[in-house]
Image (cartoon, rainbow over all chains, first blue to last red):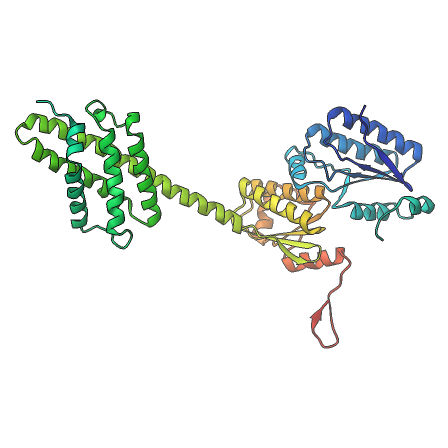
Length: 134
Length: 288
């Protein structure tokens, strides 16, 4: 079965959605992500949806759910790279994703996550995985 | 006596055309400034040809007959091109009706001997050309409407500029009434610009919006929410006292939205958010 990979980077989890989500995939992502948050004790989740061009109310709700679930488990969620069309669709559907923070791109999303969490605890892991141009 | 209208017209086509052209050239409403006489002749000949080839005793009573499709097509073309060239509808109408005069004059000469047939044929021809005249009016108006629609689109397009006031700050002055269609354009333009420029703050200036009702407010809230979903912050500026009054009276909750009185204060707020500072230099000049 198809799964969306969840990458661990320090105490953040990275999810990049590169394919169009269908319902089953989205549900799997939701449960996998919550499992991973609990297993790794991640403090932040970054979801990149820049490749997502079609969204429906179900998908919108799943994204909102992931945000709220992570929040309960003490991990901040940032959704980055939402396409204009997707944003308009979600607003027209009345889904404002209240609990979820958003950022324009991955770079700004990481910045936001860091400022939200404050200190960056697991520095060693970051040096191995991080390719940001900073 | 029965007259074959088709044959008669075919035979007398040249004569009718001459007659028609003479009528037109003699008419004082002739617009030589808009179309040369040669062009007019070509146009008229084309129309007459189409009419003469398609008309016969059977379909002369029925202007809707498919036989006349080509004729009507040519008529529409003439009508639309005349609308664009700046002819008045009256002039186009007179142009078509002058064809009737020319045909009737020719018929009169041909069927001198039989008043009854002359009357019947004239009546039918008259009716047919009248209905053609009405068609030209219809297409004329259609042509004008297309022009109006295009202009409306253009106005909608030019009235929603997205200005990059600073690195990372976009401003969007809205002038005129906001309706659903316009908000859609505004929203799409703004969101696209946010993506293209990577800006994190957008200022929506509504000082040019004459009135804010609940629908407009709803649209504004939608735009702000959509910007927020994209990961940018949206500030609404230019709220005039009257607008503040109506918004509160209507019970619209704008407390989740950052609102500023003027574009200047919105810009100042944006600078603070981006940790920028505006200050005077030693020479008392404004710079950053």
